Amino acid sequence: MSIARFIRDIGRGGAGARSLSHAQAHELMASVLDGGASDLQIGAFVLAMRMKGETLAELTGFLEAVQARCLTLTSDEPVIVMASYNGSRRLPNLTPLLAMWLAQAGARVLVHGTAHGPSQDNAHDKARVTSAEIFQHLGLPAVRDEEGIRGRWSRREPAFVATATLCPALQRLLDVRWSVGVRNSGHTVAKMLNPVRGARALRLVSFTHPEFGALMAAWMAQQGIDAMLLRGTEGEAVADPRRRPRLDTWIAGTPSVEWSAPAQDGVVGELPLLPPSNDAASTALYIQAVLSGEKPAPAPLAQQAQLLRGALAAIATPRPLPGKAA
Image (cartoon, rainbow, N blue to C red; front, side, top):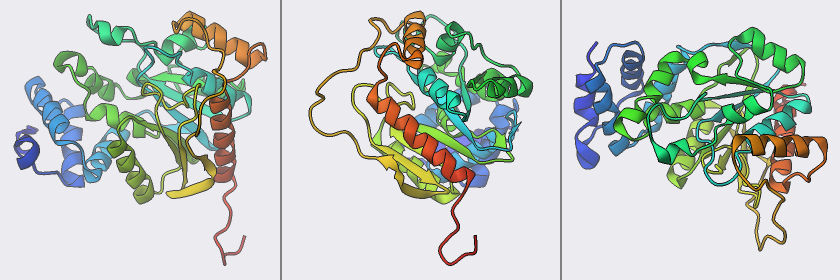
């Protein structure tokens, strides 16, 4: 099915573009994912949405279409779901540290993201160190199916699954970036995914621009999401090891003061001991040293892990509403 009629609405420029309804957004994304649009149409869709920006109705429609085409994972316990699509260029990528910390404490942790860097020669993005690379150095390569995920959980290890395994159609949309040069709505939706069924999922969602953070907060409230929202460290949903960002936790779409924290104020008295290089091998060695107690843990990450454990316990044993029987 051609998506030209949708492009006519969203492709009129920043001032003239019209937003899609939830149903229209769902239909458009389904067509893109199922091969119903030409490469030229997909490029037009990507650039039009980039110029216009997504509305909440559009994002939820896109998400619904992507979610229906993803691998589903059944769990009888809540799962912490971490999206890792940015990697790092300057600081070490400590998403795997946070994931391993939580898993060793008994949480079921699922990390999803791209398995490799760019598919073409792009020096700017090739420099990014992905979580997949670091997990590989830690002896935790990407799992390929639900059995592999359960095996990691049984050993109190996080499970990393590549997007190409989790949702091949979404990975194809993400790869359009290497042809047109910019991220697209697929990258936004990837941060919102929840492949877990049978139990609640506590999602880690990062933002860079405040407007996107506000949009994600509105989504969480509207859809009753369990999540922690924070300004990402180079795009990763992990606290900056040097200074704690604001951490906002939502339980069933309601802000939770108990499991949130304000941004760290004042002058940082002492910087954490970080590895001299942010390459995957050095970062993996540093993570092992922190987990073994050989090196001190960055305080912002330790607090983020503590808040996540508390929030996970809260959704595992939800409190009765006032006036309701237990």
